[in-house]
Length: 481
Image 1 (cartoon, rainbow, N blue to C red):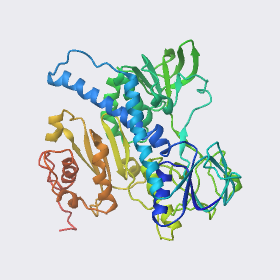
Image 2 (image 1 turned 135 degrees about the vertical axis):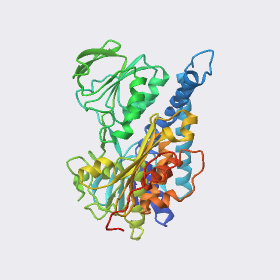
Image 3 (image 1 turned 90 degrees about the vertical axis):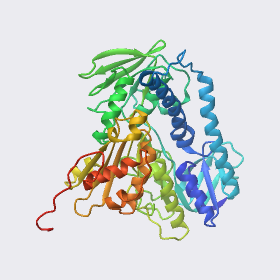
Image 4 (image 1 turned 120 degrees about the vertical axis):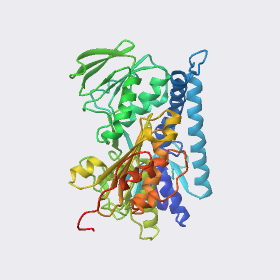
């Protein structure tokens, strides 16, 4: 069987690439090992985790009503874990079903199989699905590699117990354990730890570094760290290493090594959340000209071309950041290039969002990156305590910050911490991509009272015109006058 364009992997990058290629008039086939399209993001990542985080957020808001507004309820919430799990699965089913219909309408062939490269233009297909062609080989003119990533699990932690989970196991929501240890203070660990904590689990977080979310802006992390510490009742262990993990009956015994905690302790479940690795092993890439670097990523250019002229790479396998929205845009670039268009992936801002409570989001240049590069920037911060909307909602620990070029006044980066930060960051992405100057944002009328005003207000801080904050205007330099 021959298909001019083959997409290996049916995740958000893969199906976006396949659908656009079909829209461009190309004959396309998707090879996906799972019985449904959607990839990690939809089946056991972004979508199910956000569905569960919605439940956690509602519970948190109800708790806030009790503590701060005097709204009392007769009973604490009772969690029917079967119904929670069923609702999560319904969300996944609705979305995957929709993708299947879209593939049919575009005449995209979907083959359920595991594909490996025999050479630069041939895939060997393995599986039991009737869609696999006779002989099990699929040839192509161009292949878009979109195999994604999987959770990293150190061999020392892989003890063969279902009580030691990765993110996939945690999302299965087998039960609500009484106690759980989250190994790793990154975004996946904090998101899933938040879900379980609000469902009633006593959660402990252990992180090897000296702060949560290593690499993220400290100004943004600070309010979240306080909330996580409260949620975990002080059980956030920083600068601490997990020495070993062992099963002891129906418990998992963990040894700790560090100033915050030393010794051993038992938990009902352990979530190992220390990152993800690209799926490039076992694909037969050695039978092609594709180059894989020492981190397991496929090397490719701005048009998503690899060193093999027949193969493109997108998404998690193509390098950091490992984000679904980045994969989708790379998929569109690859499809357009195959269709003969001069498309390139040259984004000035790829937003990142941590869907905890409060949310953290950033885009463009960060303050840490500016310092590391020795680049002079103006950092302008608007605290949400000055926002009427934030005051009304009782979420005054948030903030919005812009990084501004002091010479041109162009916005270079943005960071937000607070409720809905993931939605608010989209305006900043557009501003950075368009090369906006601060006044472009401050002169755009924002609705009042909303949290979106904080983007305008942070810009006004830079100009010295913020209504709710007193910051004198900069005096012009002698040379300017």
